[in-house]
Length: 272
Image (cartoon, rainbow, N blue to C red):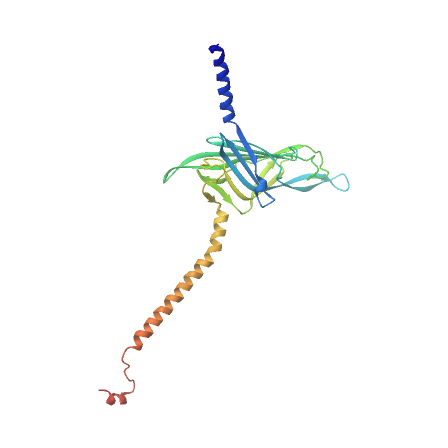
């Protein structure tokens, strides 16, 4: 009897362990005040392991017939990432993935992240980066593609990508718009991915649903410097003026207390 219960108990324990290790994915885009911005969270073992916030749009060229129905002309589809997107994710020690699909999987975006290290003059340092992008789209979908010639599914991918490079343990932040070029299987056309308002961390999240310290992109750093530089210069100029006025006031006070020697020699006889 006890021998019969043991396999059942082991099965229950195994099932409980699998349940505890289940992955949770959440689309929290509705929490963003910006209707163009999406928020995605991947959790494993009830702990956040990947967070991504960004606004994304794809510019996809495609062929249509000219008015003479003989020549082909190129049109352009502007495809935003929809708020009702479905998502999957995978977290790992050195590799993580985020997959987003929308409009009944007519469009699918896959982001691949890699964490690695290198030696510097300060010693070994680790960082993570966006290592690959894959975008699948269907030109037969009529919301964004109008009268496409030979409609069908195509895949646009990055080539030797190293983007969003960030020190390990930090999140990446960039409010400015960034453009990443992808090469499509549709006659090697160039698809543009426009990213903006990005906050992203695929590794080493220490608090549930909370980004680690941000690492700002160079464009944001430059814009922040351009905004603060006039203020700094104004403060320095104001400080110089105040110091100059103080020195003048002190000098004037000191010279006013000194005995004034007459410049006219005829006045010397009245002195003493």
